Length: 241
Image (cartoon, rainbow, N blue to C red):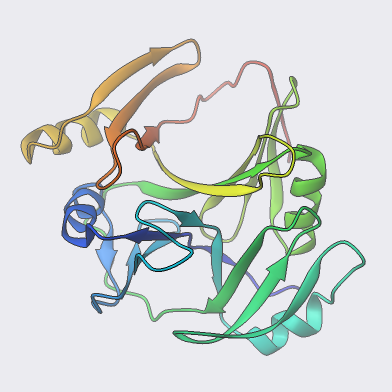
C-alpha cells in the first residue's frame, strides 16, 4: 500500500513577508518559521516558502509533497522505465526525488508536524503540473498514489487528489515541464472579503464555469495567484468516483 501524500509545492521568493501576509489571510497557518524554509498548512494541503537561489529565481515554483515515511514510500513505489524514484539529500534533509518522463524533478519530504488548524477557513492547496502530454503526466502521479478526480473532455486538464490537497495537470508546451501554485476554496466570497479587509489588491473574474479571484503574486510583475471555488456540477468534465 502506498503511503498517503500531502500536496506541498515550493514557492521560491525574495518576498517572504508579503507571501506570508497573503497566505495567512487565506487561512494558512505556519508550521515552521525559518526565513529560508517556511511551511504553511491550509485546511487541506500545504505550501513551502524557500529563499530564492541560483536555479530557482524569485517567483519560481516546484511541485512537492510530504509523506509520513520515506522508507515505506520507496518500498511501495519503485522506479519504472519512465519514472525514477530515488533517495535524495536536499538542503533541508533527506528526501525522495521523483524524475518524470519529460524531465520534471520534484521532492517528497518527511511530513512536517501539524499545527492547530486554520480557524475554520476552508481553503486548500492546488498545485499545478504543466505537461505537453496531460494523460501521461496524470498516470505518473497515479503511480505515486494520487487519485483521479476530474477529466476535462477537451483533454487539457486532469485533476487528481492526494490525501491532502489537489494537483491539476494542465496542457503546456513540449519540452517545458513546469509547476505552479493556486488555492481552492469552498467560500470564494469569504476569501474576497478577507483580502479586502487587509488591503490586498485583487480582481474578481467572472468566467463561464464560475467566479475566480486573481491576486498579483508578491515578487515578479505579471505573476498571478488564482483562487477558485469548484463548480458543484462541472460542465465539460468527467467526474471519477
